[in-house]
Image 1 (cartoon, one colour):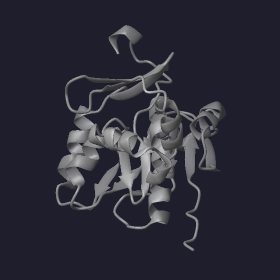
Image 2 (cartoon, rainbow, N blue to C red; image 1 turned 60 degrees about the vertical axis):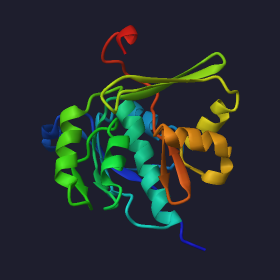
Image 3 (cartoon, helix red, strand yellow; image 1 turned 180 degrees about the vertical axis):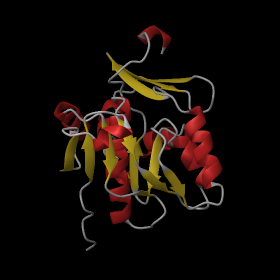
Image 4 (cartoon, rainbow, N blue to C red; image 1 turned 90 degrees about the vertical axis):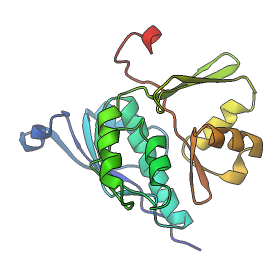
Length: 219
């Protein structure tokens, strides 16, 4: 039986400015986090406005344990991005799926480094240049889910009124085994690039907005 991956941890500071690292009273130290909902909210409540992941998000190493570790850390990046907390993280991509993978993740705050494919530096430059908050968001209304996706340059809007979707998204939010969600839902979400596949885990990409940068009607 494979060993369980170590839970994520972050170094955190009370201000987003990198100079805050040097100021007395700004560091919150190293904070271990259980891989469960609420980690980003906990950091926010502690006063964290900048966080550094303890290890890279590795999507290139095969195996369930590596996938679980990567998804746990991607959850943090996604949920901290939703709160506009500055995240310092590093990304390792498989060489054969680089362009598709970085664009799928481009709604997240850009990493410090991207390694693996030959075009990693070009991908990182494009990510940094084109990134803004709320590129891929979702909301839940009475009897429907709506996703707004701007990762590809235009606005793509998806509305799902199938009553199975809320339960599916709840399972996929932290990464679920692909057999835990109805196959037709996984296929549809995969076709629209709304989930990320890591080994046999499937992870929900969009985030719910926690901090709006402009009026909601404009987003």
